[in-house]
Image (cartoon, rainbow, N blue to C red; front, side):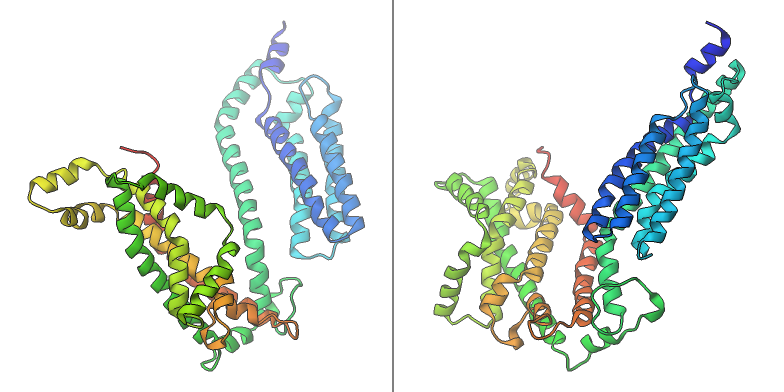
Amino acid sequence: MSKLGLARRWYVPIEVLTLRLWLSISILTNLLLMVIDWLREDTLSLQLALLGTVTLSILWWVLPDGKAVWKRDTSIFKAGLTLIIGVLRFGAGPQMAIDFWLAGWMIGPATLAIWWLSSPNVSAWAKGRITIRGAELGLSRNKVLAPRLGAIGSHILLMHAVFVVLIPVLWILNVALTPGNMLGGDIRPSEWTGEHFSKILDPDSSFWIWLRNSIIVSLGTTVMGLSLAVPAAYAFSRFRFRGRDSAMFAFLLVQMFPGIIILVPYFLVMKTLGLLNTSLGLILAYSVTALPLCVWMLKGFFDTVPRELEEAALLDGCNQAQVFQKVVLPLSIPAVAVTALFSFLAAWNEYLLALTFNTSNDMYTLPVGLASLISSTGQAWGDFAAASLLVSLPVAILFIVFQKFLIQGLSAGGVKG
């Protein structure tokens, strides 16, 4: 085999290898994104998206392989055609921010393909003019650029994943800041106002009553739930007693049934005890409902605490209660913090029981209060969006504050010993 044949056989520019991978991802993504055009019933954009996906597929198929010279020019032509289709797709839609994103999955790969395939290095390789020395330099270049391009591609995919997650947040932020009660529309910061936030945060607004009730119920549920779950989980972890396995199985069995099954029995119990329209009734209901999950989470962590530490404390003169208080509990702070966080959030976000047990506006919690803004007689979407963002702030702050404990608590029980 000639030296030129060896160079073409063993060397492929990193641009071509990366294009082959990125175009595959772009084709699959465009197929998925066509669902958006279909849901919007935008026939023209859907047709252009389908045509652009076909040209991207042909571009991927005719990428240069170092053997057929014509593939390089054909690839550039197909990339240019895809670029034109992407621009037309953006112009055919309502030209919202999401349309630019949809068209970007055609415009971006096509522009990159034209740029890379027109470079001197790829052109020389595609036309069979690469030398042994050029191939050696190209292999060294590939070794340097491959990790960088891989990192760039990973970050682009992660940024799009973040964007998908942020779409609902940006949408509700736009609704909250837009005057009136418009549910949809493009994001136009020039028209944003704070009238909905001012209305919700008015001192005479019911929002403050709902917030007070939610704080009381959530904190009460957290304290009562931990008071029951911590000793129960420790007992299940350390002691062997009659009915232990049956009780643990019962906890699992309860979690398998949907919560709506217990709605009527709970209501009858609360009515009999006179706990309807009270925070105490919700605290009791939430604490009992979350108890099985809390016990299982804490038990898994207590199982990882070495028994030798407790035995050493017993030899030093501590009784069982002191061992738990001074040895086990300090080591279990991450797990207790995570359990407290889940208990708080479960009570903070719960809607069905709060709606069933409370019929008075003065006893509404935040989820029920927010739902009351959207009724059959009127929909205050702007106020609803503003209140929803305010309700989400404590949750976000709690996750940031407890992030360290959250990671430690969720991973600590995964490995025993």
